[in-house]
Image (cartoon, rainbow, N blue to C red; front, top):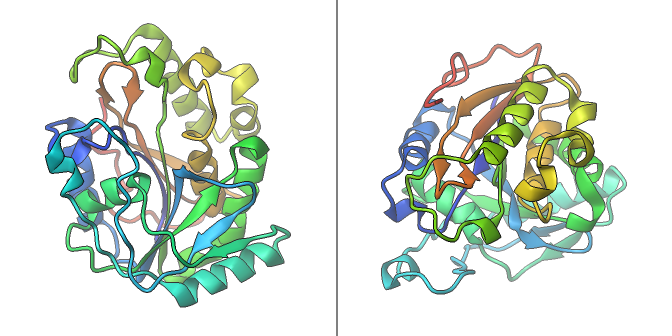
Length: 275
């Protein structure tokens, strides 16, 4: 069965940057069973209540500014999955979530940046589900739990955000700068809580984790972690697949989640690309 994944997608420039996280994502897709579709909960689609995009073909949304022209030339023309989108919306409604269907939205960079590296042929149908930053971690864990049955149906559920995300602290940091202590302390706390299955602590990370608000002045980039965690089911087991840093303050960690009773498949037997 497919795992669920939490990906730190980093800067939109990741596909054009030589970085450990880029190399890891480039080999990650090949190590997984090929999904029939991919559902991404992206930090870059925020709505008041859950929404799913239902389009025949995905446009590439360049939802950023001030980057080199080569970045705006990148496209990820993956097919959509409108029928599956309707099924996802129905599943969420059945779990008590008022859910909208968006028939016009394509893929934001939280989706297409990592997928361009993982599945460069763009030949797997992709759809997105939005996040609701005002509703917090518990809401997103429940949302992920409602999506968990999709994994048995060949759908790869991905939460795309960033393990740390304080853009105000980026100034003055080079691409390869090491992480400051306040970044690593938060990332290490998350790693331990996930490894030990301390879900309640994770849900209360803003109170319990060191430097939580400094690493996440706003929550939208960590909430996809809870979607991915929930999508692995009640007995979710986390595997830390990759850890690296770009620009000093952006931890690019990747986690895979499977039910504790499931036999992990490559690349989940051993962590890969960790530091």
